[in-house]
Image: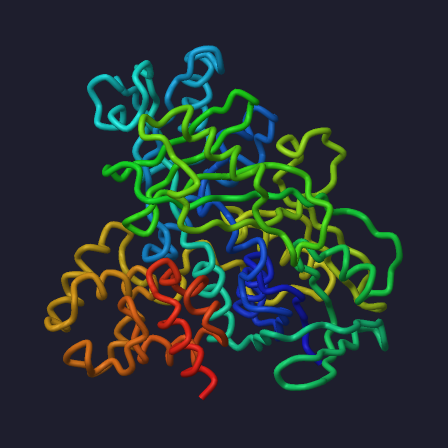
Length: 491
């Protein structure tokens, strides 16, 4: 019998599985689709405190999130790195004094050691003012971090598996029933139908957490989750510098413009209640127009529908706290424990975000230990994720070493592989002397050696998994490239 069975392969489920197996519990995880195929790959891709949450007095959440920025950066310096955010003062919106005070609090409540502090910018002199319309003179520049969200999830799952957890993708939990002081769990997936036994169940199904409670667990009328849709557009590059923009909108919301995949700019997000099936979520025409209009309020170069190269949309499974507006609903996580060691216990996980996923897992483990008894101590704070075993400021030095070992490889390919896989890029490159030695070429700089690694080590199954979650090469390949990759996978 397993100690713990986790439902859901997003960031919460993967983080819980990793922490639990690292403490000595036996763990299995099931994800009905691909890892990070739901909310966890539809984020704005930030490790941040949530500056705007201060307005809603979410001080505990902001403090915890701010403290996690440098912890996660140290754990995964290949997929997480610092960014500077430019917040222009918009006359008629939040006063400059309010922005300055909020950022002073932001700087000092999270234990910042490595990230640089906030400073004031004169946009008439600073490069950050050049892409903006005339009239924006004052701005504040502060620090947060970027994360490759889907890869962050996969790395947590990979580390869990390396430590002994069993990870099942494309595997649906059909039912879970209490029997003999534990759970009997019926699965239907890649391995066909199977039955597992576990002492404790973790429901980390994200937008489907209520569906699991109602369907899999057999409860009725459970309603704990408020689904809030967030959509993003990716457009051709709007500016040349490497900083991001944090913009205020006239309706009180905020949005970001972020350098993305070298040649693009990511704009988002929206905040609107969603009442449909989370499987069907996609950006609406209204959201697209909203983001274009918001960007055009600030940028001198006007953005049109023709500039959009990709869109993505997801739903945040927020705990329904009765807030009147979607943007006011709490972003904090809520954990609900039901049952005990004699009857079979379940923890239902509501909310959460990429930034606080490690701390959420620690909180879940506190509840697990209260039911099952403790095993090993908390350990993830000073750990690294697969490939992240180099210093937070050593990426360029690591890249130089990789280039010396593989001098005939393209510099762009080596940088991309190091950004995605860290030191495990060497596993992919192996004994190759040139790009021709990496196997079949699938367009852009994707080769068979990388595809084979993703199939064997990272649970990739489809072209979509590879092109849009494990990498973002979907932005660069042709339809013919996709067909060639699909044929390879089928063969």
